[in-house]
Length: 351
Image (cartoon, helix red, strand yellow):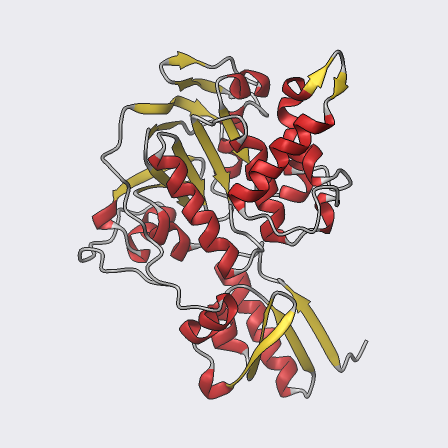
């Protein structure tokens, strides 16, 4: 259409690394042809690669304008969150406990010939890495009971979960924060207070009717605990920012005292400041005794948050990495089905 201005809003959020490179090559070509491009993204490496100028927004206001020479990740982060962001990784308060969530020979319909054995221990954050299409989300859905396994068993605290029954998982306090919060984690047209209590509505009901005072009190408690930015608990979940929507999803499960939580792409589409808050909450949950399984396509996130990492390749686990063995090279080698590349001991990781 011979456009003179193209606005791209988070265009790479669901793309692989090679697809992202192709898109950024298109952006470069458009610029060379005289087309103006506005690229909206939370992936700062893309900004460093593609941008000639940067405008930084925080809380709806322009807080900085950077020239090409000033475009650096640490500078952008400082402006985005209003402070320097220190090391992402927070060590656990103590050593991990026994396995709270265990997968024994689990096979999904996505790759029925491959099986997964996995243990998530009490008090740890286990990262689950892998390329797009490796079967991570399908595994999460199967563990939570949304899909029935082709084979294998899921155990929570030494008790076997019946397959394909999310209610059984919820009853044992195994919860899923889904990849697509808008479609699977929230009812966007419902108010915040209703979303927070929806998974445990019987607790807030009296003779078949919702006790609005109880519902409001619980939602207010989660708003304060998670710092959900909203003028009122009556506004719809769909009106919130991505970060605040994710906090509402979390509030729904935190009100039910989770024993194990699966986070599928927990910070996709949210800003750097909100990401850091999500990371803090994950660590607090683990330190309180929950087991956390975090699925992420963001290598920086996997390395910066996880106590251990399991890597998936074509529906199976290709390897495990302890904290001191984590590196992009080791994870990527396992993700493509090769042995982990030899790397030096992990240094201090900052974002």
